[in-house]
Length: 407
Image (cartoon, rainbow, N blue to C red; front, side, top):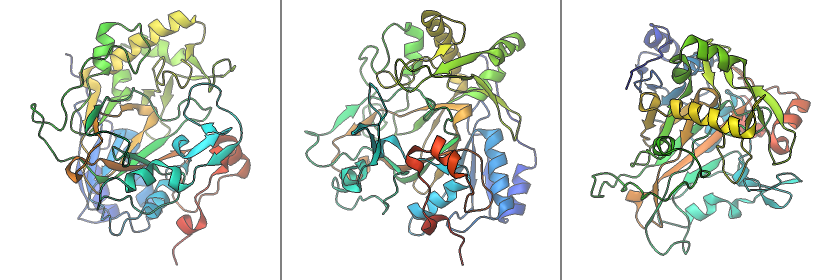
């Protein structure tokens, strides 16, 4: 395995955080061998941020691709405060799990159009999570932008503990003309049990064939896809380091390519770049270089000028490169952490998890927000109404009670 690390953050990053947030701010970097990741402690996100502090956070993510702001006090840092913080990164979007399109789930195979209606809280995953274990409850919220990522499935949905395989490698909502810029987790509960025979939370899942992927990929790619962490971590692949590690002639070829994405099978779709340049850092990265990141839900993408078959062969080879161990990072969560990742510079995947759990030691409970568009050092945001209508599902905006200036 050939090692490669992409480190572009300024050498005095630690001094910059101390100047912006005070001497208690401490920086650990990188978190991954690829150069991805930074962990910052000593920052209280329940307090409003000054514009210079926001700019430093934005700049840091543009270099590091993933950033954890550790140790938030969950008695003080509410989900409303979390959504206010997210507004600095872009306009929060309602998660597809929290609404219906044309009366059916938005993340579902087949046509995905029609009128948008939000699910009431009682019909969301959060309500089921609240009914699973005494003493393990979601933080209060109603916002459709908050996705509850959890293995708390509600009573009566399982006959006992079992293992659910991990998901598929993807970036968030890459299938819309304006993709997601950042996503972020606020961590509430993490599994602490390490009772499997391998000393981890769960055993490695049995080989179940190509699921959840389309059949036909070669064995090496499938093995890379399914090498997932076993302690509830989120798996990441660093697509900036993977791009930088390629020979110059390959990078030039990829920069010239365009891919066609679409929401539904049969749509004309649109052409967009495969390689993106971060406007702050100038770092170039591969954006969702996956032929079919959502099998059975969204159509595969095509490379402009290639047949569907040639597109799959080409993109499978690129995915195989990106998922090599030297570009992988498995992020272990801790309660109170806010972890932010740049979707243009990474892929991620959910781990195998226990479901049907009956004790708090096995609980995994995180809250996710995703944002589109330009950052905003000062709140509230001033997004144009026509831009919101084009790019934000159902025209969602965070309410004034969340983003209004503090008095």
